[in-house]
Image (cartoon, rainbow, N blue to C red):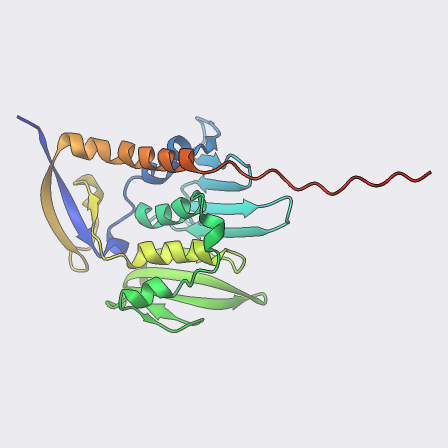
Length: 250
């Protein structure tokens, strides 16, 4: 007889609590080939992309975002940054990291971040504010030092924020769009008993359901396998185009 494990299906997903960080960190390391530093005396995780251009840092901090994603291209000089509060559901952060590690990522830079919101019935004004149908998530593009940055806040009540996400103005639209798509996805997310402690039952819909212990245990490895297969099927990067050698003159 197979062992059954009870897990909660929670919606809306943006109020489901943070979940398991390995949904992001293990997937990047084992599925997408990101390297990690190891400092057992520090409560943090630092992961770096194979091309050394993108870095993810996870570090608990009471007064600052826990998750930081930054990209710096030494060849082109492009730099962008994103951050997420400790209460941000890992499924939303994974939407971003999965987009960044997608071999087709560069082909989707013309994405419209508002489109997933409008399709899900959110109130979204182009280049302005947006909010979820229940009013628990609000976002905006705001001016900061002359730049148009993104800020998203999920709250139980008007003055009780659960988490915040921030993208600077240089963040590629495809990255912001991936976050918005994960944010507005109506699909419930799974949480264990321990992960539901402290959730506001008045603001969420929660249904307990039984799965086989094997399927629960296999969820993360299967995700890692999918990402690894995607990476393996990607064509090799094109070699850099070198400038022509200078002509010799006599």
